[in-house]
Length: 409
Image (cartoon, rainbow, N blue to C red; front, side, top):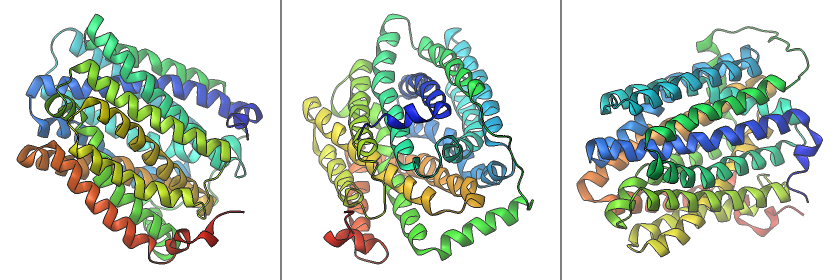
């Protein structure tokens, strides 16, 4: 199956995907440069993790409320407003760094602003997907969206490394600011049916309670959210610690660090394209089982290496496992959730994958890395992930994935 067929069938998704992918190149440039800048300013792995946590703490605090907004108001308009605000934030980061006025305090403050905006933008954008392609093409669209994310992850750090070497670290932030014009241009060209407000307007706390009860009382949703939570908190922070791992464990400079992130992106892109071609993101797909076990196993191997050549290969495989397991989980959740709860479901998902991963996960990983070394921070998380994956897949409703009968025909 052609992995790009969904782009041909849906003009709105094509505009969204092209603009979003170009913008994500800039976002990955900023992410790579921000981690390296934090390390240069502080020389402290804990503070490198804290910068990431500062950008994600607002997602923890506000995303569930933002999910109510995504169900109550026009999602396309919310995404446009948030992208425009992110353009302003990126411009400020460029100006402060370019003029030499950036400090760790300023970096933390701007990261926090980015997180506040993202707490609204992420659930609105995620729940907009089904409006762009419809329910039948949703698995392929989610996989292709992940491919764009990882294509940007391949290009962004590599370009950022060149920009930092030739022009200075500030210009990585400057190019990110310009990249927001691409996604805004695509969003303003999207044409959708007139938006219809909710038939029943509920108070924010009531809306949050309704969504939490739904997740608790729906066994498959509950099992997947628990698995996603463990893997996000313990698995994703290896990316936060990558500047430290690159310099202290592998002896690499900013260019080598960018290449490590590029390997993760190449792997993620390969995994996402595989899913898009198969259009297979159902709960019965044993690919989910394999990726859920393989991802922490690869991270455990990564924790032991001191050679950049081995690290490149393992990070490629980590990218495959991370994206395949995440994209399948996202597709299952969006397929099962009622339309009226979609924004809140995606808010809960971003609360875990972005918020908890980069606040609780980054904070804990930074503490362990400071006390015992970056390799132990990665290894301990990987071991717990493997143990929980075994626990989850030996119990219903995920147990069926561990048997051949669960495979799709």
